[in-house]
Structures are given as structure tokens and as C-alpha cells.
Image (cartoon, rainbow, N blue to C red; front, side):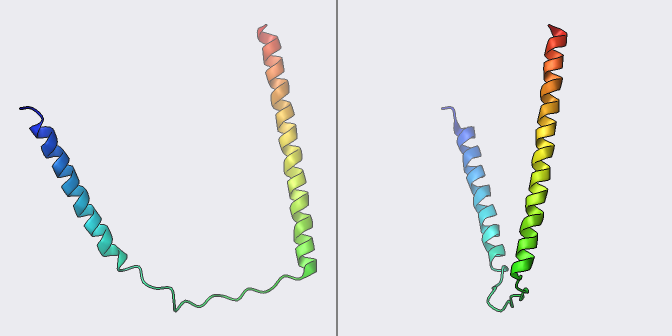
Length: 87
């Protein structure tokens, strides 16, 4: 009967995968615990600082939006010029 070689290859593959799984389980014991970790204390932001950050982000977002619009317009003009040139 045919197929013995394929079944043997499947069994070897399963055996190799099982051996890899055992190795992964061994390395999990080295992970450690996070119970003794001290969290850092960060300073609290004032309302003025938050407002300044908000304004700065709004300005940057507006500049990025303008750049995207300009790039889109340039690409559209280039595409239109190319289409007019080939026709």
C-alpha cells in the first residue's frame, strides 16, 4: 500500500512540534513576577500646560492637513496633465 512515507513524515512533524512545545514551556518559568516593581511617579500637568499642549497639537494637525490637501491637489493636476498629454 502507498502512503506509508507520508504518514511517517506526518508523525515526525508532530513529534518535532511536541519537542518544541516542551522547550517553550521550560522558558516560561524564567519570566518572573512583577509584584515587587515600583511604579514611577510622574508630575501632574496643570490646566495651563494642558491647554498649551492642546493648542500646539491643533496647530500641527492643521499644518498637516494643509500639506495633505496641497499634495493631493498637485497629484490631481499631474494626473490630469498626464491624461491630457496622452490623449
